[in-house]
Length: 422
Image 1 (cartoon, rainbow, N blue to C red):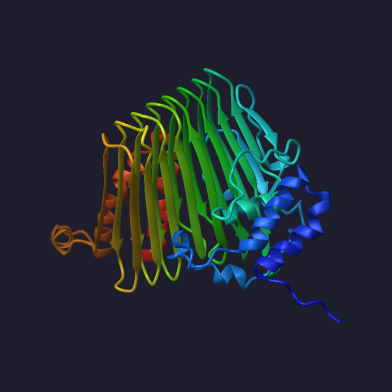
Image 2 (cartoon, rainbow, N blue to C red; image 1 turned 60 degrees about the vertical axis):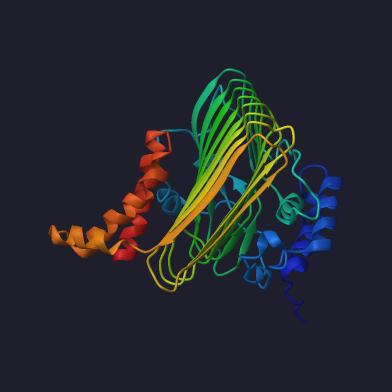
């Protein structure tokens, strides 16, 4: 008699029980995460932070352990952006040394599987995805830059392979830490074939005067699910500059929690979501100002075609001690179809009395007058629309300071638009 296939929370918990004795790291921490996940399960839309993103398709699927660690990924890897930098390649959640070009000093790299460390991410009832990852994480990248050094650029690539229709689930555990005065740029790329769940958790620590530029390209398979959670702690005069580009996946969500822990800390949480068909993508951010003179900027641009749906939830929390805070968030959406939808929810919670915090949102179609002007100059309709879309996105992409990384993302954007125009 065939055993029933377990889905949803039961499926994840059953997988944990099967893997438990061979997972790296502290089992007490994993058991605590499993208890939290058993109590709460996957979040439903009745949870305020998840009201616009429905995880029932994930709950209905059964995700299995990847069975092959030696898959031929040459064709898939060839699709990744080409930049002149060391690369760390993970396939189905496991490090592949044969595909990687491991960086040398001053950047220090170790595998989570070799030195497991769950850091300080929460395991309470408000962090269900962190609990799921803590329960099932098997591998990941731990990156560290010593004091005062510039480690340049590193490319972190996550690939998922098609295992003949079997839905797989991987839960990488990454960490990035910069000592005082250090600098690092990370390009993180996620892509794959077939149906799978990619649910990484990344912990980031930016020490005093350090600068981390973190560029994320999500270009997963059209049938995949991508649920990324990031926790960033920024010390005095530190900078965490983040940019997320959502292109792929059936359903995607990037959730970023940034804490400005020291005076004069800065964070930029920017993003672009380019969606078509029935894609759903969600960028949810929470910036907590705990010290004075902090600066935060959140800007998300959406271009939505077909019946796609984009979500941006941006939250700013200002503690009583965080005087002179400067916080700003903006969401701008370009609708290419009358059936596309966007949901925007800004939140401000301010306990200090000397702050400058604001938010805004715009939603519209391609400007008919601008389109007419370009057409009247002999520019074909498809090219004219492309020019207007690129102009809409230009400000967001120009904010990426690294020229080669910016060019790589611009190539991805061009490819997406050419596919829509075809």
